[in-house]
Length: 469
Image (cartoon, rainbow, N blue to C red; front, side, top):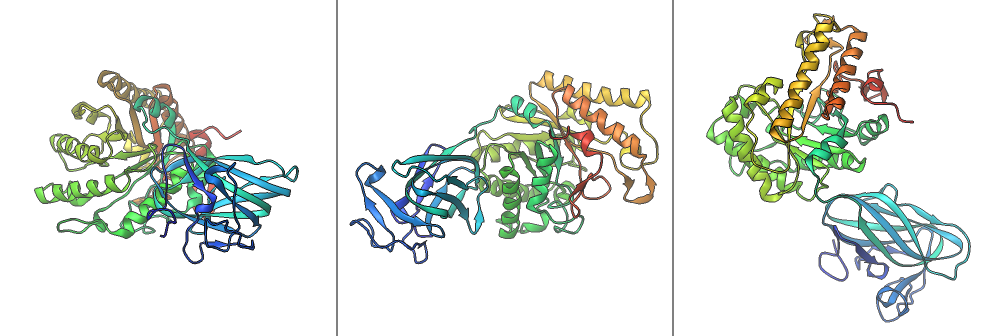
């Protein structure tokens, strides 16, 4: 990384930021143009930099042609969607521009200026460009025509802080990327995550994505309990894919049986170290990233879970004072565990429960579903959840619900297809009716609707979300 004006390059932050065209990196290979050197006393580089007091900073880059590029070392202070404004002077033949990072063209960054009057500087706007946080090198590419370039302005397009109640309403119906990063190794239980999976979820109409992650195989067993770089990097890559699509994204600690089965002081320290690292690594992500402390703490008591929630929440708040955090109760976090869930004094919490009720249908496929009693019992679960949310004053979600196509432990047990559709329909209707965000459990297998290899959906999808117009 070699910024030109300062050691760390240009900072792109949560307020409007600007990259001056002439401040490209001085590294070898950081520019490639056909323009003659007209440096005007500003730069000693093979790029035509022209002096003009009427322009920003008094200089601009001239005679940029299709195929030229300029690179800029930047530090992105906050990941999320940005709006761009290119200030350009195109030739009569028009011009085109785009940005890329590490060879990846940033979605929506490509713009063009039609042929026409070349006598006036103009702004070319675009929006919805996702930038991950941290240091990186942006490449500004000329995709067509000839033009001069003064600068590129970046404007952060997202809220810095999200209010929990309105966020839960906006989250609506989402989907789990199940059996993926939560597996013993990615690919062991379901196909590895691909960026197009997240794109397909969005096209289908889901509004949030839960990314379950099991960290136990990727963190050392002795102090300082370091998470491997590979696990952090891969998790961040998948999180960025999801955030780029515009989702609210839930990131958690999932199976972690090493902690749940053996809740010792040493394992508590290890779990605390895990969350210290995760919270720090992801602290500069969009506010749309939501942390979930621990999934289904089977084997732990309510007292242990409540203590853990409070302790880890304090750890998260040290680096993420206003990020939304999901908490849940003990065991499989069924509806009854809300009664034993202690709610910390915190303004950015979301409560959570899971529902595969009745399991004999939704998990084991040993009975039918759809009687009036079945409907009444599911209705009572959501009413109980809504009552709890109103009483505690925090919003609530059910970030796992679903029904198996067959019992993966006994494949001969197959659930009735129409029963499954009716069951999912009632979950969605009740969740929406009570203002509860809901995340369908899609595991790439018996609980799935999405076929990751074929990139096709079962008809469950149109029960879960309304088809896009």
